[in-house]
Structure formats: structure tokens, C-alpha cells
Length: 182
Ligand code: ATP
Ligand code: MG
Image 1 (cartoon, rainbow, N blue to C red):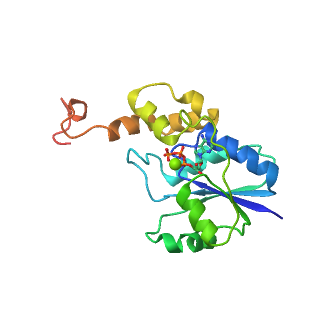
Image 2: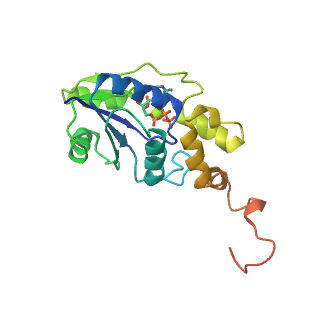
Image 3: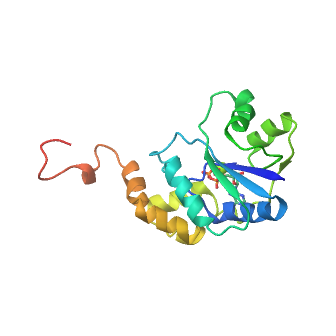
């Protein structure tokens, strides 16, 4: 039984992530997806909750041919203990797939084999550029699986991101009638 571990923040889960998962299921028997920075949500870098990210991933992977587990993992503020923290939260695994330099280093130092899949159309397929598109009203839907478009619509995710982008002085947040205070 060969289990592989793949970690990201998945803010949001996009088609680049899907290419990594396609590779892993060809090379491993089971897949563990760790949702990093699970405690973060409702800020511009991390708009979606861990639960919403679980929903995006499980809906997008419906019908996947191999078993998989999706596990939210909160940050700890000690990189030297981070691999042990991951291992304490996941089913046992033998290989890691990541392109993140810090994650590569931490697992290699722990003596575990790391694979770094080629980045797929990275300029457009990055969480940062997709979130920027969501903020500015550009199209982003073609960069994520259709199931993710649906989840973001259900949770009114674009409205949330636009609100996160406002400040107290933005006229859109001032109520012109009704409530006495905001
Ligand atoms: P952000 O810009 O918010 O950091 P991201 O696109 O880098 O988002 P992460 O959740 O940080 O997404 O990445 C999770 C993992 O997926 C990392 O190992 C990352 O290198 C990898 N990854 C991200 N984008 C791609 C891509 N286009 N092709 C292949 N792998 C990718
Ligand atoms: Mg990243």
C-alpha cells in the first residue's frame, strides 16, 4: 500500500492542483490531501474556510478512481516540528508531492522522499492570480474545476472577497436608510 501526501492552502482549489492529483493517482494507491493554514479564512490571502475548501475538493474529485482523505491542518509556529505535526494528523504515508521550497526542505530533512511535479500553466494557474481576478471582476471560472465554481457561488464567495477588499470609508458599506448603526 503506497500512500502519497499532497499539501496546499487551496485558496481556491484550481486546475493546476488537479494536474498534480492526476499524477499522484497514477503513482500511488491512496492520496492524502492536507489543507494547510486551516484556521485562516475571511482575509484576502485566505478567503475560504477549511470546511469550504473541503467541499471544493471533495466535489471536484467526485468519482476519483483511488481512495483519498481530505484533512484540514492548522499552522503551528515552529517549522522544525511541522513534519511531526503533519504525521500526527494524517494516515501513514510514504511519499510527498509539493513544489513549495520550504515544504520540500522540511520533509527532506526528515528523510522522506519528495516529488515536485511540473507546474501547470503557473502564470494563470495560481491561487494568487485567481484571487486577484475574483477581486477585480475578471473571469476566473475557466481556471478551476466546474464543481469549485458551484461551491463558490453557493457560499457567495465573490461577494465575500469584494467585502474583504473594502474599508470603513467605502460608501458601499454605509447604510442610507434602515438600521440606526452599522
Ligand atoms: P497561492 O498563490 O495562494 O500560494 P497556489 O496556486 O500556489 O496558491 P497552493 O495551495 O499554495 O496553491 O499550492 C499547493 C501546492 O500545489 C503547492 O505544492 C504548489 O506548488 C502546487 N501548485 C500550485 N499551482 C500549481 C500549478 N499550476 N501546477 C502544479 N502545481 C501547482
Ligand atoms: Mg502557493
